[in-house]
Amino acid sequence: MHEEKLVKEIKRTALQIRKWVIESIYRAGSGHPGGSLSIADIIACLYFHEMKHNPKNPKWEDRDRLVLSKGHACPALYAALALSGYFPVDELKNLRKTGHFLQGHPCMRKVPGVDMSTGSLGHGLSVAVGMALAGKMDKKDYRVFVILGDGEVQEGEIWEAANSASHFKLDNLIAILDRNGLQIDGATEEIMHIEPISWRWRAFGWNVIEINGNNVKEILDTFHNIKKNGKPTIIIANTIKGKGVSFMEGTLSFHGKAPSKEQYIKAISELEQEERELDV
Amino acid sequence: MFKEMRNLRDAYSSALIELGNKNKDVVVLDADLALSTKTKRFGTVFPDRFFDVGIAEANMMGIAAGLATCGKIVFASTFAVFATGRCYDAIRQSIAYPCLNVKIVATHAGVSVGGDGASHQMLEDIALMRALPNMTVIAPADATEMEDVVPEIANYYGPCYVRIGRADAPVIFEKHGEFKIGKGYILEDGDDIAIIATGTMTAEAIKAGEILRKEGIDAMVVHMPTIKPIDKKVVEKASKTGRIITCEEHTVIGGLGDAVAMTIQRKPAQMHRIGINDVFGESGEANELLEKYGLTAENIAKVAKEMI
Image 1: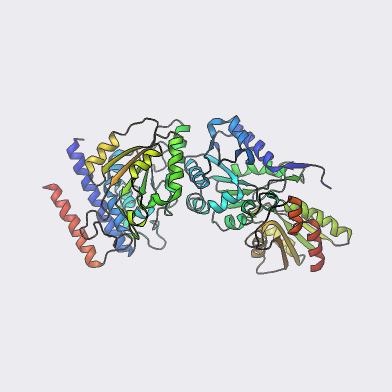
Image 2 (image 1 turned 90 degrees about the horizontal axis):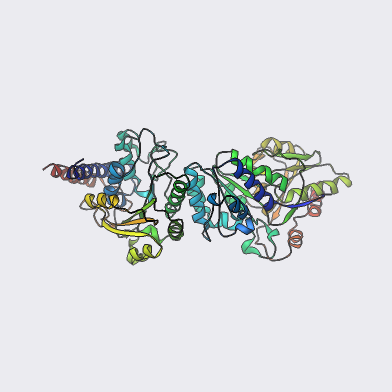
């Protein structure tokens, strides 16, 4: 596909994901819009271009895997899976409903296409290390992607896992840090600093690339250029929490709260306006 | 009365290697205790299928889960205190909830660890692991049984927790092939009282049965290697004696005693739980500690007589 056309297509998909994030959380009456919106562009790039996967065969052995370690952002993942064809898009309206398969945090036993159950923070990177290690043992060329929250890296197990990934030379492991700067109680740097974040990962033996994580072209180019040099790679993706909805952008208040009816209508109309602007 | 002593960790080590020869999907992980848990020998024979993750137990559980999603049968070993207490949330989130094929085989459970003291004497692990949905919990009694547990859990799909002690243990079973997940074993039949034991305490229960028999008390002796799922039929049979003593080298809260009590809650029998009574352990000689905390045949027999 012509590059400009590809970027536009993925931007359109990211907007669809954003609309579903708002729709599904609004209908659920609870959920985490802020951190779901911040990763929408990354998720769109992964599922609609970068990752090798097959919605008709979710357990395909040679597929690339994704561990959404910041599991609370699953509305974005569910939207990407539904739009890819893992299950009907209409199911997204049943997020968090009793007896429905779309749990508030991802469950691999219930949702086709979810590669790992997550929710309790800090565990996903270890699991991704295990998946990448299995790939090396079996001489398979699949890659393992893992999306981490920036507040999440305050968990100690992240650093145990980071250490083991470079020790085992897992260059088939690619982490993406959603650096939106905010966690529930406030700014990461005020609550418990994680800077200098690039240097911390470099010190643990990783390739570190810093990008604008809401810029589709930059995300695509970054994935394309990742080296296989015997080291795991982390992309520090600078994002905006709540990206795409004006009154959610950069605020703490929509970390874990559903929009009201008025807010929902306003959010959807803003995203639809953006969609129309794409076509101009 | 027992002819021979053998170590369950050695049995684990040999059984793992035998399993590794038969099944190339078996992967073993350890967290810097490979010499103590005896997984090191597996690593020497199969260096490509053994990973020492260093002193990072929670990470080990996550790695085990990740390997399991890719079709590996993963054995993850460390001391019981680190395997369960330290890693509870990693096991809950990444192994039990997604029901992955990880076998946590923990050594150094109970006060019989000895000199290392309370910090290393895990007494709550059965309770912690039993509380997790999808988890199978097993405490083998001797080396023969341990050699059967390893291939048996490898053949079963799902998370398992196996706890063994540090010390050598009397050989109770001469023949292989008896152990099945979820099966309890009536070693001696009796009508007056039933003694249900697991792990290291089964040998003491057998000895207690002998003591009581000499005094004219007919005790049923039951070995319950699988604490979850428990063998309800065998427990109900034991309950027909009207009196049950449960024995475990574990706190009396949440372990075998609770599992037995739950089984007979609608048709209860008189019960007494022998175990550690809600205290931490301490340093000392294994045998002296077992005696101090009442984990002996003599104490089981004494309690039985009080109940009759």
